[in-house]
Length: 421
Ligand code: UD1
Image 1 (cartoon, helix red, strand yellow):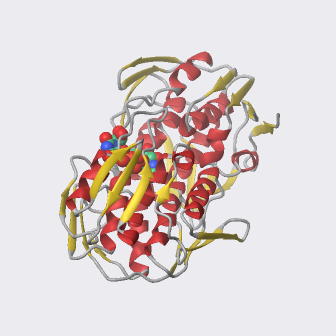
Image 2: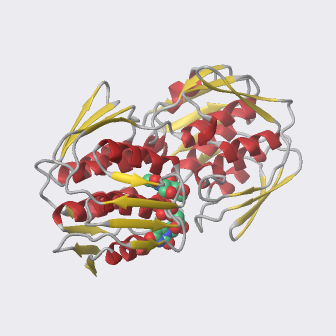
């Protein structure tokens, strides 16, 4: 298995281009199942999760063609007649569950493997199924698969989510575009990826209002057409690389970066002593002094501080002056990076969903590994400022969510390389 070696020290200066959002692309791709006409996605990120979604859609009978070095995906579902999403693919990636709503809307039938737990928590699908049942689907769990049918098609309904789930909002939004009548989603998630999905669905002919707020209204239509849509900027990749110069000093411009995607995160950077300014091409980041200030973080649904940036921020706060308290409110088991950072000399105590980080003057490079994507990248960031070499193994996690991580960081002066094995 490949590993990544980071040698700490040295400022970072220059520009990093930010890719299209993994999490947006993973919900835009299944939208192809809603139409017989082609859907073209531009600005797609080059990631293994996108390949997994491609494989899943192909197994359902869809055609997926990659163009322009995989930055453009042309998807067509006119021959997609298989409603079975097999465990062999779904187990690799939880976002596979995003085919459930579109399959049910299109065929009146879907057989989708439950994804099971993952490193960061149990992650059930109860609120997806509750909402689809309200829309008239009958759903049974057999042999680890959700067997869903809607023989008379889906009906519009009022859906009250107990909390704002990103994936459930996306699944219901897609399903409701072809349902009979009006669907209202209360307590909808407000993430930019949901707004991006709604924008794309509108181009395909869907009638949607209120995306980006907690009440989304969808008026079902008989059919959807094709569209061409650019995937929104990846706010998590953006936030991750915004942190890089905070660790090392220097000035880095994030090309394509937008403040509205990272508002709560930028507030915390400001409190930690890191300046973010808008430029013609994106966002420029530099720290105000060598001292990072301790800050407290609570993860929340958008527009709050994203759980997907918690690990990276914790890595920075390991170097802060003072004590920071991080509360993880979205996932029950999302501090796996803490023991690895401790191996590098960090002072962190974890109790349940709360981590207390007492800043130290420096960390020391070490062999480390992580069991999820964001945890892995947090170790690379920590390594940028650590003394000596940090060797991050289990690199396949990074490949799921960060395209060209080595060349992007090398481009601003980091000493980082990938070792093939
Ligand atoms: C999406 C993102 C992920 C991000 C997360 C929260 C994608 C592909 N993934 O994941 O990167 O970390 O949002 O911002 O977009 N839950 C239930 N029952 C359900 C559904 C969810 O209990 O039916 C729980 C989950 O276990 C979790 C919480 O709700 O604790 C939030 O999950 P959700 O917003 O659904 O996240 P995902 O869509 O899986």
